[in-house]
Length: 471
Image 1 (cartoon, helix red, strand yellow):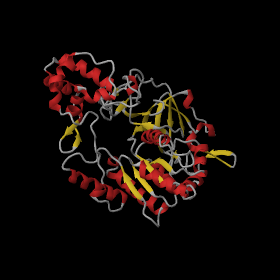
Image 2 (cartoon, rainbow, N blue to C red):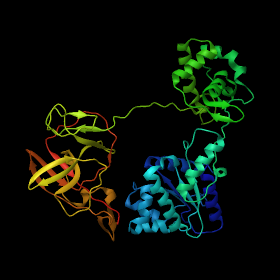
Image 3 (spheres, one colour):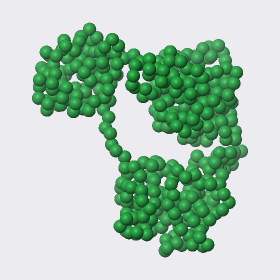
Image 4 (cartoon, one colour):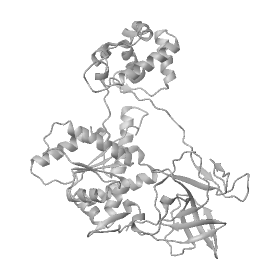
């Protein structure tokens, strides 16, 4: 477990009387992973049995925190700091007093940890590789920190040696230091059932298990000898060769077919039996007649749902066209432009990606790609932004309270916009083709994820244009 050496180093430093500082920075590709790991680390520390004065302090610094939380992190450095690669970049670059203090607290950094190492590829991989080098040079110039990367899917083909070599090469490029194949640690699965019992030993008993209801009491001791649990572990979960290896996932119907073939029982009966068995063994032991809190077989059932991909809509009156393929115009109504549609990941508000163009007083809205970065220019004839249905909650009048909370800070008792947010307010009320538009710096977390629900007809539109850059 990657936290063991980190916690060990923190405890040793605490016992040696050293002042608390940030000894480990863990970088995640997504905030959701940082939030989840925060709970897991807290659980790990709370179960360690350490006295309170030795327990590591863990904090999250991902951009989701309030101003008060950021101030507390800067004033009281945590032992372990969880962040994402974008926030880590901002910590090193933007001229913010709190961010500067957070980085200063990490002087002498001993651990740099990248979670989900396989996600850092291509341009993003290059950015993160540079970030690691800058973090190392800034926080630990005199002593190279220990670099740790975690991934469950870095390499899955070939021999053990080949996979270790492939992983070590990627890690060496990302961390900027030589990492050999011997430093790659793989998992070592252990059987949950009785390892002295082979698959062949329980096959004669399998039909009776499948045909009869599950016993009322199925604690861990009983399941270690239960024929169906041994079959499920060895036929669905593990390859029991010279070394135990995980089997590749298989469709549930295929697993049912294997059980029917092994037991000689009808497929419908096997399906019901396997569903009931997997449901039962996934419960905590105290719900199966025992006393423990853990599941016996921690299987995972995945359901794959295809996303809608890109959505394009017209801005006409009812009925508006919604298409899933990118085109310039509505094929059934030439002349009606199609606009890329995105949705806020927080509230679901729809936005249509556009550029406002002023042709000598003739205002037009041209579709644009959301990945096109607006140019920093004083020319206000072309303004990149987002068209959205008018909503009273989205109205923006330039007051400070109208800006997102993450854009605001308190300095000397006065609330103001943060220094790294340079926003240009365009507050115009224009009438274009009988529709009222307002232009402002309204920020929203726009995502490509979407749901194809009925879209609100456009009666009024609002375009938001936000220009943010790091100082």
